[in-house]
Every structure is written in C-alpha cells, then in structure tokens.
Image (tube, rainbow, N blue to C red; front, side, top):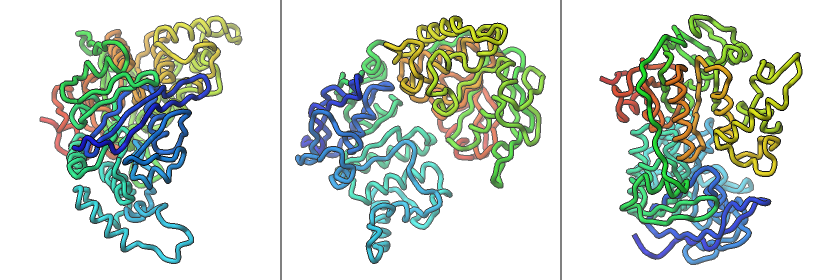
Length: 510
C-alpha cells in the first residue's frame, strides 16, 4: 500500500438550509487502501459520498484525484477520474443480460455500431482478474443476489474504476457470499485499487479495512488505523457515548399467540409468495425470520398485519381467525413496525402528532363522541418524542411535518407508536426494525423488543441482519423462495448454517 493519496478531500462543507450536513471534512485515501466510513443515521456519510460522486456540489472545499482537481457536480467527471460506486440497492435491469447491463449507458445512441465484442472481452478479463466469475449472456433476473453484486462491481471496473465506493455491500448477502466478497476485495487492494467501505457492521469493518473514519453530526470525529481498534471504541465514536448491549430477561415462553398451518399465499407468478408455512409464536418469546430480501418476507408481514388474505391454510391469533382487514388487526391490538417507513409507516405530510395516533385515533384514548381529543393526542406524541428520543422536532415540536424527520427518527416514531398502546400488544410484527438506525438507537430498539417479550407479548422479527437475528431471537426460522424452515432454538444455528439455509440448502441445522 502506497502512502501517496489517490483521493484527497479538503474542507468539504455542505449546508441544506439550517442543517450543516458536512462541516469542514478532510480525508484522504491511499492506493491499495480500504477506508471504512462509519457514522450514525444523519451523520453526513451519504452527503459526503454524493459530493464525491458529483450528485451534490459542496459549499466549500476541494476534491483531488491523483493530484488533479475533480470538477464539482459532474458525475461523468467522477467516472472519468476512475471513481465507481456500488449502491446497497442494485441498479440493474433484470430483463437484460449481464453484458447488456455492463454496457448500458457507456455508448452514444448516435454511434453507428456497438463495440459489443470489445466489451465482452473486457468484462471477461476483469472477471478473471478479480475472481468475479459471471456468464456474460445470463439474464440478470435469473442471478442470485451475490451474482448481481458481482455484476455491479464489474460494471464499475469495466468502466475504469480505480476507486470503488461500496455502500452497505453485505446488507443483502448470505454469510458465504459476504466471505466471497471479502476475498474479492483483498484481490482488488493487492492489485492497487482503493476502496471506500460504508457499513454499519462493525465486525466487518474491523475485518476488511486498513483505516476507519467516523462522522458524527456532520464532522469528522475519528480517523484511525483499524489495527488496534475495537467495536466499543467505534461505537462510542459514532454516537458520542458508550453503548451497552441489550439485555435479555430470564423468562420462558407462554401460550401460543400466533399460529400458521399450511399458510399459502399465491402471487401473480407461477411460484407462491408463501408456500405452506407452519409456524407458532408464543407469548414471551422472540421468533426471528431470516432470509435474503425478496424471498417472501414482505408477504408474510402483510399477512400477519391483515393486509393480505390466505389462498389456503389457516392463520389464527390466540385461537381466533381474523378477517384480512388491517382495521380488525389494529383493534385486536396487534402492533406492527413496517419495512417501508415512508410509504406505509407514516403519512409524510401530516404532523408528527397526527402520525403518532394514526392507527388508534378512533379509540377511547384519543376520541370522545366521535371527536378527536387533540390534547390527549399531542400529549401522547410528546411522550413518544421523549421516550424514544425522536430528533428533528426542534422548533416545530409535535407539529413538525413528519417527512422532515430523518429515516431513523421516523423509525423511532413508528416503533414508539407500536409499543406504547394502552394495553400490551398480544403480537408485535417488526419488519426490519432497525434499518437505518445508528448503533445506539439499535441497542435501544432491541431492548424495547426484548422488554415487550418479557412483559408477555409474542414478538416476530423479520430481519436481513443476522447480527440482529442472533441478538434478539429465542428461535430462528429461515425463508427461501416462499418456504419457511422449522423455527429452532437460536443455539442450534451458526452463521454458516443459517447462510446455507438462506441460499436454499435443504438440510437443517444439527
């Protein structure tokens, strides 16, 4: 690894109105170096990367690549300088081949012919060089998640990337696919490529990076070698205080609350969204559903919240079948934390206090003789802000328009609404409950879910984060292509075994 920087950011500052998103940030990246970029939700990571890639223009500061100034606000200039980016959510056309996706946007529409053969040779050359084996003629929609990520990386490499930005690269991968990615990264840096690695998984950060930069409230608060760092140090740097892990109370499971037998839900395609699921969730326990995104978890969450009806099989809550109507599930006290906070969790144009009571505004807590008790609703919203540390309400208080909150603070509001009902929820369905939250908020949310289980609620957690699954679950089941494995004690699973199950291996953990 050379000491000569290939990338230098000097005094990068960016404001959005009164918000100072980046405050004089200076960083550099050496050839053959992996720089991990950490920070809680809203710390300024996305803004900084967007400035680097030309999507935003900094109010102050400069960027140089290999000693040359990078023109601001020009994504094509960043690409020409050898900067490539692989987003957490892939930007591939599923109906096109691997080669078509790699070439997409790289040739002028007015070109009299295509350089397809040359592009194929370059693709195969880069694939062989870095151990990223793919079939150029395969349709992207038929590839596994790990294979699609290879295509994204190859797309950047074929276009000449020497500095690669990876945004949460393992968020949708099995443990085996993550290990394969780390081996690829090692080959890349050995051949002189430089990598900016953005992740919230501290074990991975310590494993793959040479140096770690931490942002907090828009400022660079730490820039240190990975060697000698530990998770506690990084967590404290990210949130400004020590973070205690969630603690589990010693309680045993109670009566069965939620029962699925042969639960089947047909979709528009040939394969069922849910294929003959069997599952029990008991009071006082946390059952976690793991799996790669897109294998039926969303359909299961919709079913358990009354938004979809079974095509076959049975589904009961405390022995009673409910109509597939969200209102009936709310009235039954079932609490939900939806995956899509923006489209499903809140109505962005409503005030925070209105969203706080959105699901229960007609109940006796907040309604009298058909009239909304606004004072009670606002008092409830204030208690949520305080108890769940919902930030971003300065100035507006409970009247703050909800869409002005960061994603993480929206999630805190939704979680608070779910867990603060007048009566204990018999079932809590938490779908990706800590997505987008900083490590301190994650620990808090985990503790709230564990406390709810200790108080007697049945808790079903759907998560793609295996660290979260193991931190919370009494029992774990894995979804793959609409099918659900048996829910077994967490101690029966290992990372390797759960990864194989996520990839569709038939054998169960011993």
